[in-house]
Length: 216
Image (cartoon, rainbow, N blue to C red; front, side, top):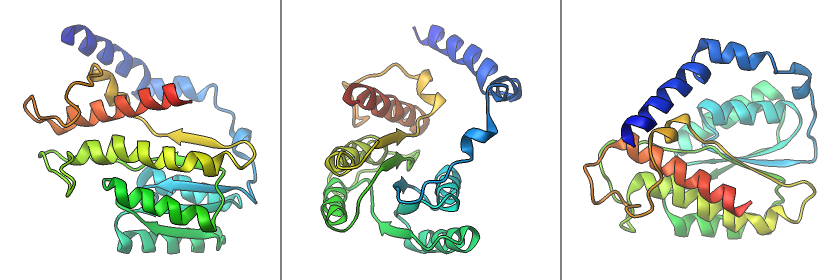
């Protein structure tokens, strides 16, 4: 089975994740689809201070949306917020410092958030890949706590907030890397086998994606 999955991943990777895959997909891309304005709608982007999250937050801000950046590192997050405001001209950029690997902190954050804000779209983008097995203060494996449990707690807690608004959405950023791992729910804490951060990350993404599909 492992050999089969590796072969499938290799074939799929060549077809979809290389330059030729990009060029093929770009044929169906319609630039005008992005020419929208979203004033009056609120978006939450986890991991919004860098990479895909930062780019997403900026594009939303540029189109008039209210953006809630949920980040762990305050210094980096404040820098990103300042840049987004300056480059987009949009002042409605809010910063929330939250460690997604701590379920109690996530839940408390949502309890406070819903008292002050509305939300139309949640974008679960944040993630980590810790290559050495680490435990949080609650005894949870760090990758699982951030990439899977954190996504679950945040999304579940925010569903009542989202459902109050018109056309709510939840977007969860996944990874093609999850295709290299068969989903296993027997060892969520990665205790029974040799620890491999890349494979653990793939499991986390696979599990989060499976939960999202079942929930929605």
